[in-house]
Length: 221
Image 1 (cartoon, rainbow, N blue to C red):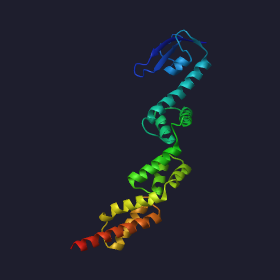
Image 2 (image 1 turned 45 degrees about the horizontal axis):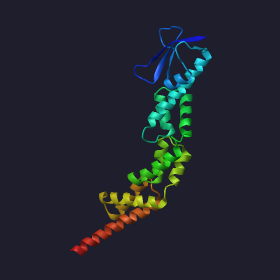
Image 3 (image 1 turned 180 degrees about the horizontal axis):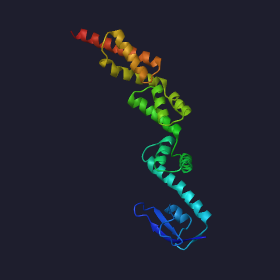
Image 4 (image 1 turned 45 degrees about the vertical axis):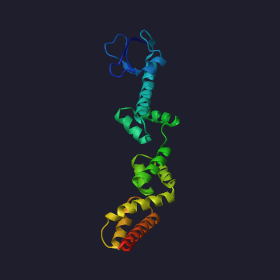
C-alpha cells in the first residue's frame, strides 16, 4: 500500500500536479488536474500500486488527448499529422491511437471531410487538377481510398474551368511557334494534375483568346 504524502502544482504547467508517495523526496509521477480530481488524489490517501499504475496509464491517454486537441487549434488536421505531432511530444503509440479515436468520435478529426475540403479549396485557389491534389492528400497522410474518393468528388466542369483559368494565366508567358506553345501549355497543365480532356479545352481556349486579341488589334488599326 502506498500513501500520498504530497501534492504540488507544477510551476510551469499549471494544470499538472506532482504526486509524492511514502515521504519520498522526489515525485512519484505527475497527473493532469482532471485525473487528480477524478481519483481524489489528495494528501493522505492510501492507494494500491496497481491502481496508481492504472491512473498513470489513464493520465497518459488524457495528456495525449489534450495535446492533440490543442494542436488542432483553428484548423483541421489529418490523423497522420496528429500522430506525428504526438510522437514528437513522446506520447506512446497506444495513448496516441486512443486520443485520435476519441477525437474522431467527437467529430473533431475527420479525414474524409478534410480531404474533400482540401481538394476543393486547393483546386480553386491554387489552380490544380485532381491527380495532383490526390498526390498531395497522400503526402499529408490521407489513406489512398479516401484521397481517391476526394479527387473523384470534384466537379469535372469546375475542374475544366480551373484548367482554362490556369491555361490563360500561363499562355502569355510561353514563347515559341504556335504548335510549340500549345505543346508546352499542355505539358504544364498535365503536370498540374488536370485530365487530358480539360487540358484540350484549356489549350483551345487560350489559342482562341489569343486569336481574338490579334483580330482586335487589327481592327483598331
